[in-house]
Image (tube, rainbow, N blue to C red; front, side, top):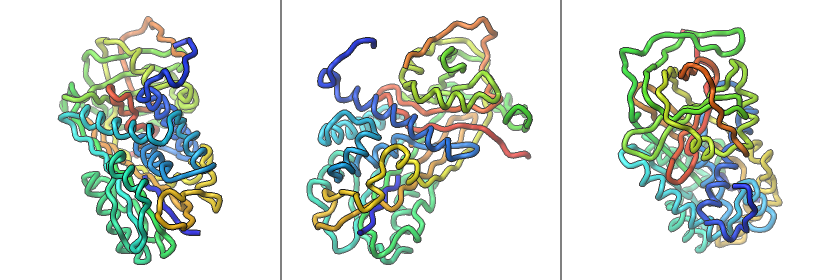
Length: 393
């Protein structure tokens, strides 16, 4: 069998009455936190992923899948739409993200690499190009070094040099037929920048015992803020200048409360967290951080229900024009984020009770927290991650 690689209210209402865009929003939100949790369970320390990047790659892959393989991908992505509507909505979502970014830099790029001598299924190619805005190129996977270099150059260019060596030559061989790649890059300045002169060393409590000194940025301004009793955490939204994008920090009450917060987040939608935040004049203190993260997603996706696509049971008969049997050998994801006084640069993807608290208005990220970069128009979690540790200087 040949190989394919993917890189990358209270009422009841009938699904047909809900706009397709809203259904996709809910799907991506659920998938985003499912993916975050699975990655968090297998990762120690800091993390950055792009749920949108991974979801888009899998959605494209599902267009060429059939039978149980398709049903497993669809279920794991929480999709309630058929293939055509899903493709249309991802095209619309990508356009909204780019439009919403405005003066920030946000690029989302897909590309399909096909083994020389093979022909891609016309329907799959049309959907890939027209709906997922994907390029199609031929390479010789038998020459794994050159093939990986070609793919990695595409990814590196699309992420402004932040994501390098995504595909290892060892992942490719003469049995490889198709590689699907999604690259996403973001760079934005804060709407309200931190003053460099106010950045100073302070202690970050990594757990109940260990502390480390690191650079903290601080300011007193009006931000959207809220305390969530159900999460035992507070949240702060910092917007990016001239765009619809923002970064949301979610800080558990307890120094050791991040694992509990992460577990609770699976029952919450990002949109409901953001929508309940209210303007507050507040003291803000956030550490500067940079995270580079790489993970092989095979086991993560299997744990989420996508098992057949990694085995001989896989049905991807809609990808090639031939009858070659394909299966997924590797799904890899690599992401980068840097947050400083100017802004952030990143590359890669239930009921909430908002309670008033009689506490001084402050938001100090001096212990492990999670964050996500959010588009307020398309309601999409573009990046998500956590900060748990800093190196000793």
